[in-house]
Image (cartoon, rainbow, N blue to C red; front, side):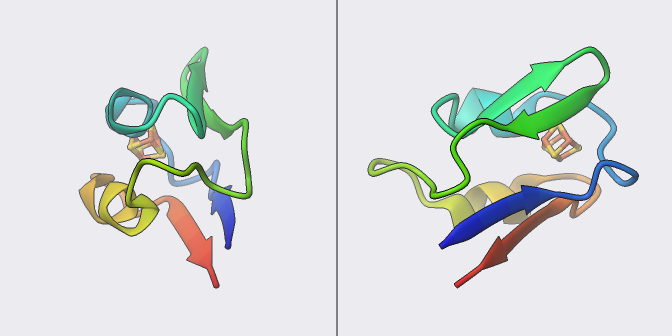
Length: 60
Ligand code: SF4
């Protein structure tokens, strides 16, 4: 799995960090991926679907 964020689309709302702080971290007004491989506990697909601007990209 590879997790990336479309920074142009991200509005920095913090939903992704709230759902999975192991993978996502908001810095300033954008989220960053701090663990592109994903984590063990969360469903990153679900996080991506919860992003209000669909900025999270999950590649298998
Ligand atoms: S949920 Fe989406 S818009 Fe919100 S901070 Fe994360 S990537 Fe950005």
